[in-house]
Image 1: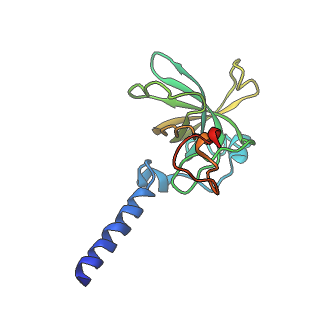
Image 2: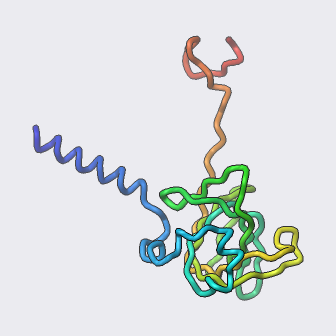
Image 3: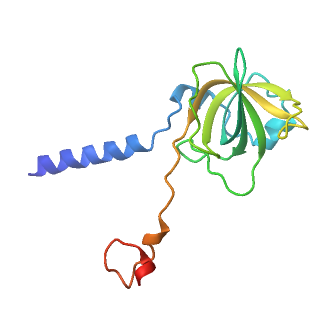
Length: 171
């Protein structure tokens, strides 16, 4: 009985550890400069040119071109698993050049993205997002996060009048 309990504990711990893993490969994650603030990367882009960074945020636009795809991203800080954690304030906008298979259709506006790549420099674009210049990274790996389903607030709050999982409109 004790052997079975120990095995179950090990399996449960392994599932929790695997669930907290980042989709970005560990080699790229460890080789990137994660301690440099985004504002510093933008203001000192020439000093950081060629260095690998890990950035993320919400996708604002995708522009497919002949040799690459240009992705405009509103920068957000990353959580422990590499997922962008966006609040009202943002660090700015950056561009990701992607050379690879099609990313597929976006699930909706504000799709979250995490990218690892080398800094190319600043690019001034006439678009709505980069009029003053945006940081450009040449991606080595890009991950589009799945959109969370919208919460159904009709089921909540149910306490103290809990009569089962149904709409609260009948209370």
